[in-house]
Length: 178
Image 1 (tube, rainbow, N blue to C red):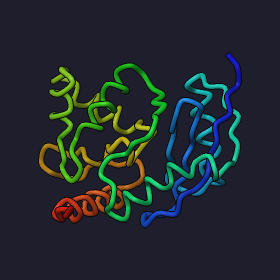
Image 2: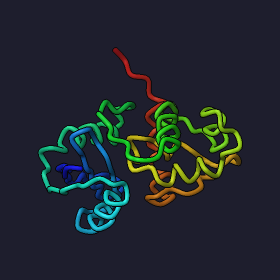
Image 3: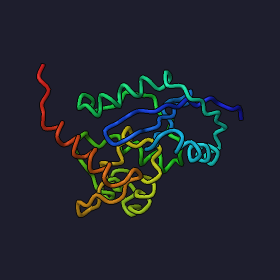
Image 4: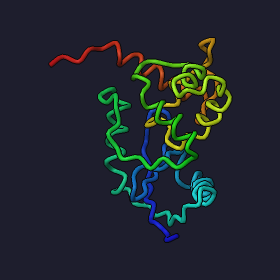
């Protein structure tokens, strides 16, 4: 397998620095934290997923992604229009694809997601797939909550999950005028 160039750069968000990685196939990874802090984990992750990646700092290549993230955080974007390179198992990809169908400003329980993908007994597996989501925010795992409404678990921390849900709920109450 040939090595592929994966470009990365940072985005300054209201919830802290986010490092974005994009492969030739699309956005492949988003990490909470600055590049210096997340690069070792990203390199390990690509190797674990059998991707021979040459990680290259290139802010210009991630500018279109950053622009959409900026629009999201400013309340102007509800859907991401980006090519995604979702690296994971078939089951994980099925879960992540379902997450992209959860409407902006709404939540679903892990059980809801399990039922939606025709795996009603796989609630724990849904939680595990959510935890391994390499594209938080864009693949909105923050919209999945416990059956009792609790904001359980989030790779970036529950405080970030709470912020993202609050942002979406505030912006979903505003109706855009023509």
